Image (tube, rainbow, N blue to C red; front, side):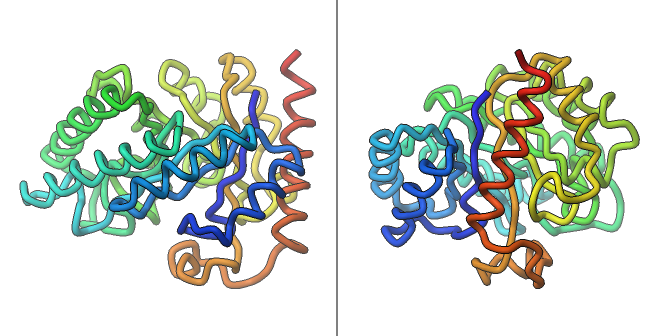
Length: 284
């Protein structure tokens, strides 16, 4: 098992000011970092970061998200096309940085709602868009880790069952699912069944507390999560996804405006210790 930290705790842009953070995360004991891949016109910067991370011995995954202007399941074909192209550019950025997986809710527009669940047409459009993206993923060698979100953030994929059905319909070896303990804590009635639903598709895991702060300090059903992940044989990367106050532009999206931890470093230290302890109990 490898253990990672999502850099969105600190930044959404990869600049030289973040370089000391990489050394710090390596010193703490992380194997992996999850990169925000939002600057779609700067492949050179991602390639530069990939080289630096190679030098540090840190593997990486990347993130992507879509909005209303590039919604892959929009009724407007032009907007769907923009969504597909944006996801392809995200994949190019991930490939340049040497990311193994592109994770995130890039299946539909974040925070956009119709007032009902997805229609048959919306589902079909989302599947068709992802099929095109998966073809590009195969070309650049980056796996897709599609993320289902809670009902307050999107309406296409809200449960593990939704995600498994989506992967079956896309039907491409590079279209897989990721699992996030925060969203599952809100939406799933049975954590074990949820993780088993993703057994054939699970490529990535986010370890995230119910309040988005330090994993292991809140109400997520951690024993059930780690037990089920062990039983299905998951053995790839677990990435801590926590949010705080360091990145002001994310506060409106994450709805976090109070400090719930001593420091970002302490959260990272405690989260890694927690994950390693849980894995050591189960994975031999």
